[in-house]
Image (cartoon, rainbow, N blue to C red; front, side):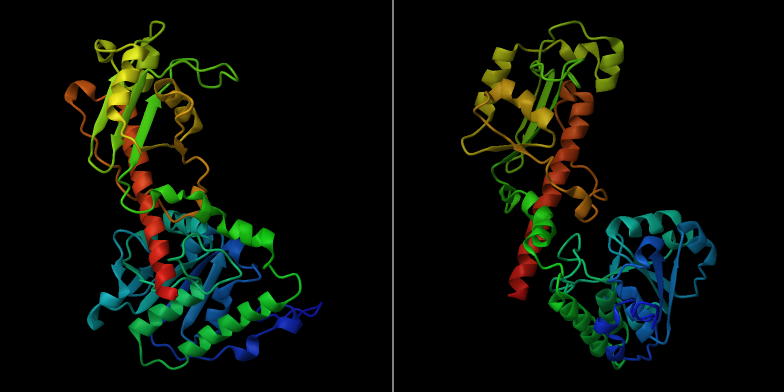
Length: 383
């Protein structure tokens, strides 16, 4: 017991210490936890519980470059880390199961940093879990309901790798005791303000993106030179406007006649050539074409408020669009691993950077929709 009545084992105040409930487990698979240094003294650090419980385990917490130097991987090591190249651990035959299971501990951003900056991890085979219910970690927010705490991930992995091992359920019970004690403690983080923060990213993913996206039209526009940072001055109509309806793949693409000559530098910035404006149309013609393209019930979706402002020149200020800028992407799972959606406008309408940014916006919309679907499925399975 430390000075001030704090336990050295679980780092909790003496009155809420739960060390006596942590079982001792003789696990066969070595568990090596690499912990981001900022996570070590977090009061709800579950990696410490894992190290206390598992006899065949090690917890390393340090600066990233020191972890890279201290890391000693053994033959048969594998990394528990989700991603497109990760193999579901439940599908591994016995002869391919890892002898040393490496687990990264920290926030989602911190674990990505560890993976990026420790070269030895990048060559390891990767495994992932397939959780069937949301995390029980009710005192700390996970970036997605498919994500679980370090202790839950460790127990789930060992249950699959060595189902004969005794005590794993007791380890989860110790974890749940910690959660229950904290939630019952006066001043615990169960108030309305904390709950609002906890659910913020869920609410900020628009429910319009739920389902088959049949009414979603993703759009992007390029502004004229000098408009960015122009303060309260009303922006001019777009120079380029591109869009795709996701249900039927219908595309819209056009250039608009610029109000002033465009410099070579600005054209290069947009990845366009002067010839791309040979078929440019007036704002009136662009409005007619857009009216013919847009269907009743379509929800025009853009990433930035500036793009929504450009859209108002085409459809009028009464026709509002869905802006995804408010989505808290930092609190969501990694959305940058997917390849951008493929956009194949006619060769004469490639439209440079606008096409690439539209592709990225479409990919983001599809990933957010998939995220909502996963959350809905997890909620249904836990009911």
